[in-house]
Length: 258
Ligand code: GLP
Image 1: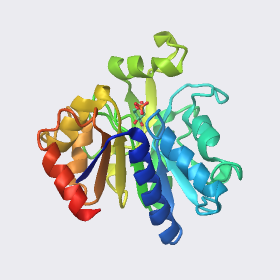
Image 2: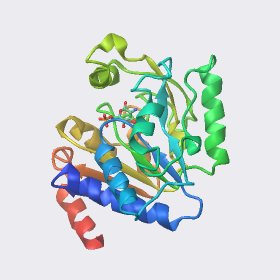
Image 3: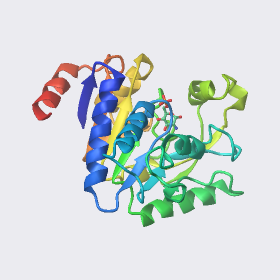
Image 4: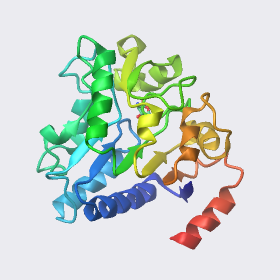
């Protein structure tokens, strides 16, 4: 795991965008794994700017989402498919087309079957060339909440009270409006991405980042499974890095390589 500690979120997003532009630009038939939540928004802004400048495009390329709320209205702005459309789809965004944006079908009558279909679809696409990740304050990635299987496939998961409280800000601050379940790529599915880039910003993520980087691999902190992946980069700001015991060493190593 490489850990990059940046003074600002902007600097981390600059690095992430440049790296993704390199990887996607250099791959044949790349599949970009995209995340939602507030964390990747500055990165997406930079990808749109690069598209506008003609140095990057997702035109004709595929993107796969991590997860989706179950039971959310098709036209709800917080439906992850709609969030990703707003951020990435269209010539005026990154050139990604709606047909090549893959998300779980969370309005299917049988969400578990829809989850299995989505897992198959990801396999058929060959998995993500590079997967963008955020992290929940309880250590979840996608919507893999604590206590799940570390090798799970795409499945229906129940959201923890912590996650629903964290996400209430996207639903007028009203906890009652936050869906209770999701379809989420499993940890085993995510681990099949060829490369992973995880971003985390702010004090609220400091404990989760400490566990992710320095904790024991455990279902209690699902993101710790990433320690078993051969190519993971963790990009954090100083607040999110504030509980890391070996922060100085990570910075030394990062500086030696960049
Ligand atoms: C959400 C998403 C995750 C995201 C995380 C953190 O619930 N399912 O993919 O990484 O929680 O969200 P944020 O970036 O808004 O802090």
